[in-house]
Amino acid sequence: MNLPNRITISRICLIPVMMVFLLVDFKFYPEPITWNSFELPYNQLIAVIIFILAASTDGIDGYLARKNNLVTNLGKLLDPLADKLLITAVLVSLVEMGKCDSWIAVVIISREFAVTGLRQIALLDGAVVAASKWGKVKTVIQIVAIVAILINNFPFEMIGLPFDDIAIWAAALITIYSGIDYFVKNKKLLHLSNV
Image 1 (cartoon, rainbow, N blue to C red):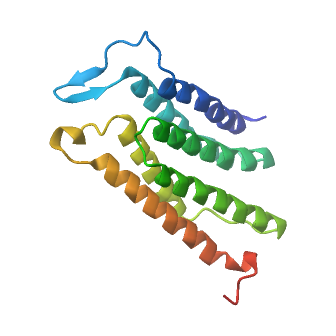
Image 2: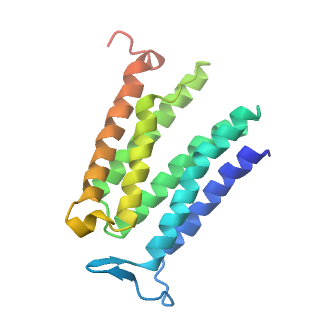
Image 3: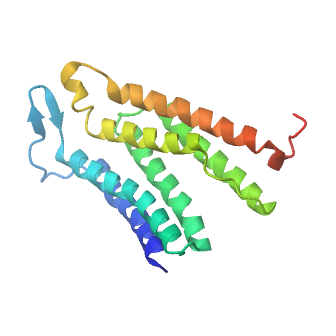
């Protein structure tokens, strides 16, 4: 149980804490933060801070593992699992809150399961499906979109720009594209080389 793995596990442990702040209606919250027509409940502010903290640990644990030669099988299992749990949990929470269309959440979550399945097939063949540039772009755009939704589209709400809607649509489209890209580049693993 090295430091990178502890950081990864801390990311997993932050997920239920974030969900509590998003979904539990505490009565002791102060009045929402307001500025002109903009309003942000404190529970969402706390949740977005936790989400950003959890998402930022993804790069930290990987960097430390590679730099200090601490890459382990446990880390290889936990790191992508933690990422998927975090994104899935926040998307389900946003759907529950009425802040994200359920079909977008299903598309993004389904892609994550599909690529995970592809990676498992690759492992059975002794191969590794490396992270693609589109996979990395997808992750960044998902995080940006989720943060924009959690902070109620601030500051774009002030000028009437639906940045949060644009960002989540972009996240869904790039998620689909990156998933297709993984399968096209690795179709030999599925014995579809003649397709």
